[in-house]
Image 1 (tube, helix red, strand yellow):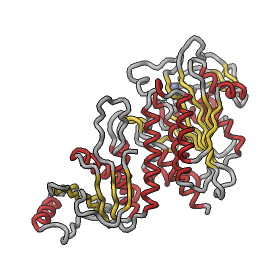
Image 2 (cartoon, rainbow, N blue to C red):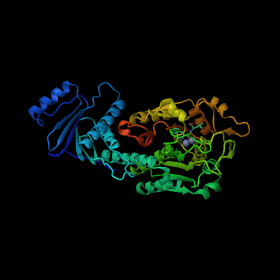
Image 3 (cartoon, rainbow, N blue to C red):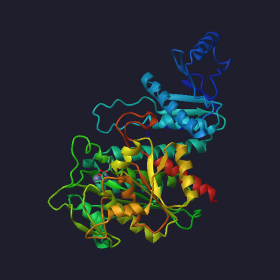
Image 4 (cartoon, rainbow, N blue to C red):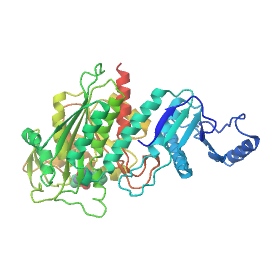
Length: 480
Ligand code: BES
Ligand code: ZN
Ligand code: ZN
């Protein structure tokens, strides 16, 4: 990661310094000169909430993110966005180190720092003369902030950066085997177990959904099993995460039209990136919770032997699926992973996938479409965690009446539902491969930004990592 975060007791005399306020700018009368105090007051009158004072040898910033009457989680989001704004100003000024000074509560200061670090992300691998951001070190001088908090934020931002890197990597340099290798590397560095099934093993297991999608590819599929099982875990049965690992989705023989709908399909493994990088974060932080993550991976392409509309595929579960659109490939391989998850008798399965254009069309990039049958209190906890990190959830119906749209004339089920409720029929399709409390998260909308969106940036956003980390952290703490 390009940005180090550390706690300091007080700012150095020559540090570039940003003063963060959350209930109006109140400059320290002993710190600023009289003329500066007058200038600050005149700017406050003009409702300027981001004041810069140029000391030639160093810059001083005074930033106000007034809580007012807003709910805490909305205020936290304003703080992240303000942090991103400061990062932009620092990079424009060519400043590499900054000290944040604040009397605000620690969680508010940390939200601000989070926005700063996430807003400083860059993907420069393919730039011949990279325009690297200047900012590389953030010191925090705030009494409530601890070294443990800065260490946790470092881990979490590393995980989000890693997820963004994976999503931004094109398929030419990240095929299914490459994705599996990336997980092995993450496992080594954070200390969780990673097992990769190769094509031979996947074939012997008869994972028909994954193999069908892979038929048009010249690269073999992979199925990665990641596990974090610490001694003293709070849960007896694991939480299982599942992520869609379609490293590129052309649509297969039901080819997507270009330009437009195919251009960003290197991001069709954003679910896989989210679950793998979450494991990195929870293992690195040694959270006392048993979590497994499963990633079925392949690209989806048309080729001489590609699976076809009209094919009937016997899935890993034994169910027979009539394929009527090869572009509905995510559900084919996720179904096999969901069936595989049954052996863990999981307490809960959370599956993340860039599954449908319908979900993205319904709510855009503003949130995550979800549906499932886990208990109301679990859904409440999910909502709370999602709000805390501002990766908000919108629950869609998970009604069995939609199943009639998936009826096939010749097989157990078809892989598309038709023109209505596309996100819902996709979720209902997946439900047929579960026998445990299950929640499906469709991240087709928020996983990839086509224009800059504050600290979420442009391109891969790493959506899902912060939500999952927050949810699992709270869960680990609740049961202790
Ligand atoms: N990967 C796509 C979904 C997607 C669309 C992700 C836009 C990100 C942005 C998925 O595999 C797909 O093609 N879904 C089809 C399903 C349809 C054929 C039933 C879709 O949504 O059009
Ligand atoms: Zn598709
Ligand atoms: Zn897809």
